[in-house]
Amino acid sequence: MENIQHSNVEVKGLKLHVAEIGTGDKVVVFLHGFPEIWYTWRHQMIAVANAGYRAIAFDFRGYGLSDHPAEPEKANLMDLVHEVKDLLDSLGISKAFLIGKDFGALPAYLVAAVYPEKVASVITLGIPFMLPGPSVVQNHLLPKGFYITRWQEPGRAEADFGRFDVKSVIRNIYILFSKSEIPVAGDDQEIMDLFNPSTPLPSWFSEEDLTVYASLYEKSGFRFALQVPYRSLTVESGLTDPKINVPALLIMGEEDYCFKFPGMEDYIRSGVVKNFVPDLETIYIPEGSHFVHEQFPEKVNKIIIQFLDKQTI
Image 1: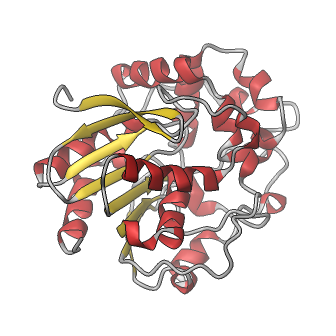
Image 2: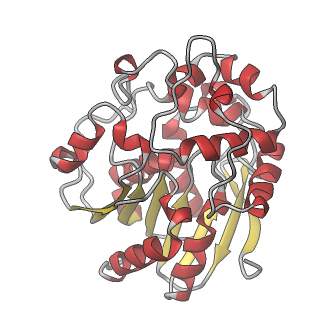
Image 3: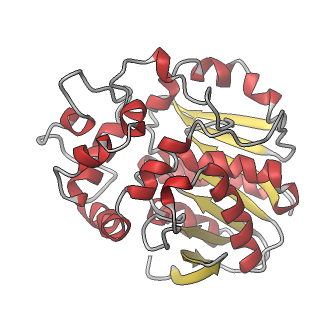
């Protein structure tokens, strides 16, 4: 970890916190989800750097050590799509491999759709290609206590999270989201009430890891994270019938709760997703959770490097 270098890179007037390791023309850019941050990719960054790649992970705007935009409540996922492209330009990178996890998968694919000249291939974990818009997540097919529905309600998550310190919020979400069941609160509960204080952290996530996450979210808070992705998921992308014409890989933990979203498993296993991503390979990790890259880093690193080594840039 001590070999990972940190810097602030100005992108369209915002300073973004960038972590980097490795050198060379073959660049891998990692895109985090929530409640993650650049640090979620610590195992993968070191592995791909050792395999001869330049690894870059950054905090999206409004996350961690990166600047907030002036009006966070007006932001949506397409802002992150342009941000990835603008960051590559700021760093003088003509083309990169993109790896996205959780909601970071959405901009990974959308950069390939909007700026195909910038993307050599796409790897995503836990989430396949999905287009932001009213139908991206079928909230109405899940109980009204579904965590995304709750977090989309202005002020509700703020009040829920505000009962705890930041470190406890991250701990609770990591434990809840590493289970195989979709987090759904009862009528008399909030999402944080689903957490059992006696439940330990997962074996693959240390107190030291939690402290790093907490320190970064203490800096940024959750204001932007609740807007992007959750409250802007239904904002149309402006794209019609997008095609991802680069090689792509989906790594799916079969114990990932997202696999139980309505229609998700069929969308992936039936191959319907290939209507949008024709050159897609899917690899399943039977015991993998939503955090499969932290849970089984050596296995995921091997899969990623084998895929990257087959690509050209």
